[in-house]
Image 1: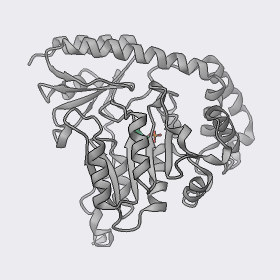
Image 2: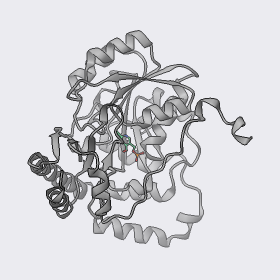
Image 3: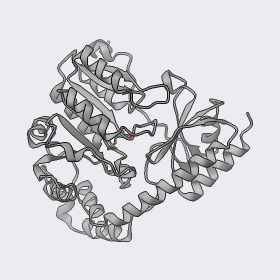
Image 4: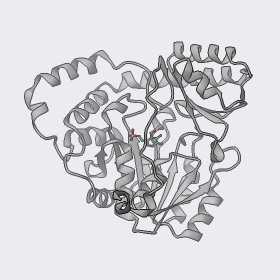
Length: 353
Ligand SMILES: Cc1ncc(COP(=O)(O)O)c(C=O)c1O
């Protein structure tokens, strides 16, 4: 049987599929619901007219975009690496640091790719638990660190899917103790405007992750990046496949940065819509608890697990958690446009418990 040739530890794994259900409102993946600026669209239209842009391989070193990012973040270009979504960066870091059987410490609950990528790369993902309100518990982190001697520690802030952020002073305390690489995943940083990036010189073990998939609205183009000191970036670069980021993605990310104020306005709108939506959700009967959020999504505890399916049947997709682990009876709702949020609230009103 051909399956006998597959790695035994992966035998029970299933390929990742995201349900492609028909939808009118898609608020399940923390994407930006708004349109791109006229300036960005015009530059894209011009870009595709140039034949070489499509027929030639991309710039494997992603120079122009790294240059722009280094100016924005006030770091050196050699302190930036770009990848196919931050998913690829997570994978590269694990490949470079974790040997078979070695440990990566991952928050629980949090973004599932930390665990999945660790296991796929022969490592062991050990969870450190967030507290009962899903806030970070630094004592739990540090004692897990002392016990497991991990090769990597992941922190996600704001954390997906719980929405809470880690305090900068607490992360600094972690960095004062933890000597192995510490990945601070700031996929939703634009919504809090607080970053650990300024500490990369002080802490050589720190790697900050960012993405263009959330605030910048190009999840479809798969582009993320990391910022760390040059030695760290060079080490991660060992595992980076050549030509990983497409020419189109590199170009469009650059166009977005050239019009960054437009996207900052969208972030402001989304953040104020989130605050309103959090209040409005509080009063809905089917919702048991609304967790505070610093990102573009809201975690809620529901009184009835059928809600996700009910909404999907009305062509509204939210992220449910299949009744397992600490996220059982919770759903994550991405903040949509004003109209989408209104539609969600009125569907919740019609839901019979
Ligand atoms: C915390 C976090 N990190 C990383 C990612 C991956 O983003 P990308 O689209 O850049 O691969 C996500 C996507 O949902 C996320 O929530």
